[in-house]
Image 1 (cartoon, rainbow, N blue to C red):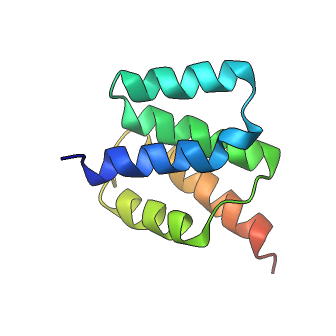
Image 2 (cartoon, rainbow, N blue to C red; image 1 turned 180 degrees about the vertical axis):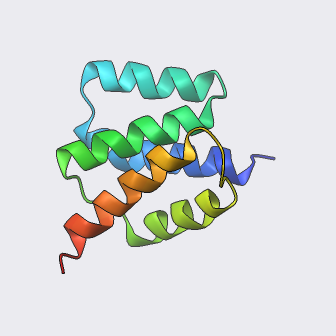
Image 3 (cartoon, rainbow, N blue to C red; image 1 turned 135 degrees about the horizontal axis):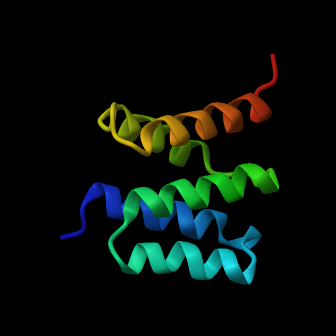
Length: 93
């Protein structure tokens, strides 16, 4: 059975893949294939934010919930900053 983290990483990659360059595809899917889910999530989200690509609201919510369990992990601050940037762009004050 696939873990929640793996499912989330694949769902994010699939949702963001329409804005991936060839190099992005290689980078994200290589990380997924190697089991580096945090790296794949970080890269996919960074690409989506850079491209101002729209992602499903439920996926953003799932990412935030998942990330709360990763407080203190080395990828956590970068992913949290990207999520905050994404949310700010989607819902300006």
